[in-house]
Image (cartoon, rainbow, N blue to C red; front, top):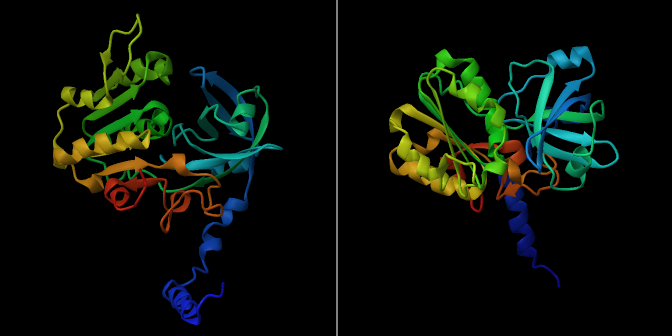
Length: 302
């Protein structure tokens, strides 16, 4: 069927209204750089998740590599493909990249079979980050559900390592059951930091669990929140955002002071595959970190 001529005119007009970004490739030029790295150690966290410690081989590249909490890398397993993974380690730990990886597909399945010394490729870091500079001098809520503790761990490190810059810090973490808790070996370390409170809850307890049981929003009963003196970072399944951020908004925490990570939507990491686009927004380029006001105005973002 032929398309009427006026349809072509409309399409042409739309192209004129949306100017071409000729500088886009220059901004993304670092996507072509692959850092060769080796797996220096592996820590089993649960039946499905492992923490990989990666070390960039070239000493000069290792020194140059930096990232900000909330950013991600593209991790390549030669011969199998690559996947986007949020960085879970401390930004101050030079030369060591920590990635918490769930076994969920071909590439991650191969990684879970890898041993210490295996070689991989890293591109990045990519994406936006949590605005921790803006948060200085405020109370901080760090909220994670399930695997969401992996991307939240980087801002936890940043806040606890620069403790004088922030006021009261509350870490809230929830999972379906105790067997799915991540990084349990660090809980006491976080609790010992002055002014840091850790609250953990599971939806279903086992015989050994003595903590709170229920949805993560139940933990708000334990926390005193001063809405206009608080910033919040929320990581986890998108359905959790609706309930957690809705509660915070209801009590008066401004939407532009709540930040979420949409890293679960990403695929190629540089806006080529279009799998992460939400309208005209690409999660991998414009995100993965967004304030909640922006997310609420992105149709089907959560």
